[in-house]
Amino acid sequence: MNKINSVTIVGGTHGNEYTGIYLLRKWQQSPQLIERSSFSTETIFANTNAFRDNRRYLDCDLNRQFRVPDLTNTALSNYEESRAKAINAQIGPKGEAKTDFIIDLHNTTSNMGPSLILLQSDTFNLQMAAYVKQHMPEAIIVMEDQIPLEEQAYLCSVAKQGIIVEVGPQPQSVLRQDIMEWMETLTQHVLDFVDAYNAGTDLDLPESVSMYYYTETLKLPMNEKGERIGMVHKNVQDKDFKALNPGDPIFTLFTGEELKWEGNYVAYPHFINEAAYYDNNLAMSLAKRVEYKVPQR
Image (cartoon, rainbow, N blue to C red):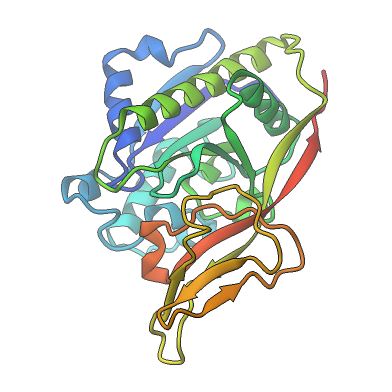
């Protein structure tokens, strides 16, 4: 991959995920904290009106509006759809973006700790994953490259390289010091990696790095009327990235009956019982644990 000349850090894609918003304010007051010698850095407060109204979004999820057909469809004109087009005009257009690398900052109500979500498994991303794990062992790396970047709907897919920093647990519309420290530390390591990558520095990276490869998303138990009839099992709640074996209980119905994980692989749940996903009745995402070989210079 070519040198990264420009980095855009985005906060407030969801208006009630406060950590990224307040970190942007900090960095705007002290820009030297996110500056590096080999690239320029800018910040974007993505969804100001949702933050004003203390909501995740006003009309639709801003982080699902960045497919090229949607960005070019003038009939899609509600607040978030219009905001996506404005962001795309500012740092895009997608496919020929002005910025080389986007870091999108998010909070989750799930117990995911400091997580880094990658959308590509190329040399740049694999080396970044290894670098972050080397400098921040508690960080969790999630790989979601099952969809080509150009087909992704995430904001960070506007650039040729983009990642999501996802840190929790944090309630919506709340700040926590530990979560803010995790997010800032993880972001600083990513910026340090980009600077070293640009310089061609020998990073002395490990030969492999462990990640969680997204496999599927499970819904909460529903009846034929589309009503919820159960909840995430207490043995799974808050156990993000802990092994779930076939036959382990995964849901508890309101009748008291337990439903078991019927998959044929050891799964690693995450985004467990995420509050923002209740409007779609999503219970959790699942992943497999995979060891990736790290390309060396």
